[in-house]
Image (cartoon, rainbow, N blue to C red; front, side, top):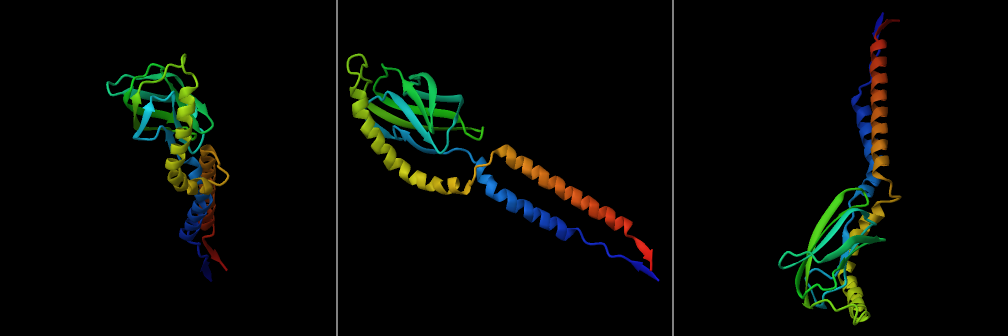
Length: 210
């Protein structure tokens, strides 16, 4: 009496492997999200008494110093940034020239996110007076600007920090992007091996004689 052994359908197995990959990779995906700005000093649209000594941009993570650039241009398009961008913790700072005039400024920034992707943005501010001469009054800009900067940064960054908080919590252990890709490739290779083995078993377990 001939008997044909039933071959198990591959559809449910493939579906199970796909769901397994999604479950394993879902907690890791936020780790590759780009950094976001949580605040700037000066604020966007802020009016200052004098031109600040430096521009500060705060991010959700530490950006890379390589390739970072911050332009501070007046209404004539002249850039008043002095020196290179300095990265300290999550803050990117750009010093200004001491003779920067009063007027409206547009800040255009571009940095490399901690996940190695470039991000950029822009904001503006105005200053009623030119930058103070540091040789005559070295402590005046610091004493007058610092409290204002701290206060305005808190008022503007509080809502943005709350919005960015879920992303940092979901990131979990913060696995690097390369680890996520390697894990995905490993799971895909495992799925191919399982499907191949089952297909071969289905061909070898053909009709038999009882």
